[in-house]
Image (tube, rainbow, N blue to C red; front, side, top):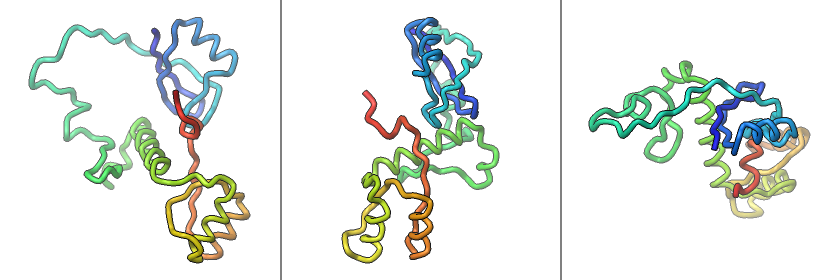
Amino acid sequence: MKVLNLQCQHGHGFEGWFSSEDDFQHQLSTGFLACPMCGDAQVAKLPSAPRLNLGASQPGHESRAHAPDSPGVAAGPTGQCAVPADNAASLVPQAVQAAWLHVVRRVMASTEDVGQRFAEEARKMHYGECEARGIRGHATPQQTEELLDEGIAVMPLPVPDGFKDTLQ
């Protein structure tokens, strides 16, 4: 099994697992391989060092990445993404991507997909015709503007393709 560090032309980094180099090349050439963040099929292999497992670490020597005072993104006690304001500007792209994926996962888990009925359902909730709940779906730019004009708070949320379907 080959584990490769990959990156799309937009700078999104991700990992790919392949049975061989030929499998990677085949998936790349047929367009089957795409960025899970944006769907871009122009993917490049990044240089990486092999991982050598030479034994367990010695007790008391935790990795810096897992130390409680290490910079980056952490989940707070309620599960929100906790990034100190003074640290937000210094986040590396991988930390920003991880934070974004965390937010998308939470939204997907806590909302109902109403699809093309989004504008209709949002209006029903706003005017008290049905119980308020978290929803997500599709609205045209015109529908979005109309909802905002009516005082209905909506926000576009681009969802990576990998979150739209159940993974096997």
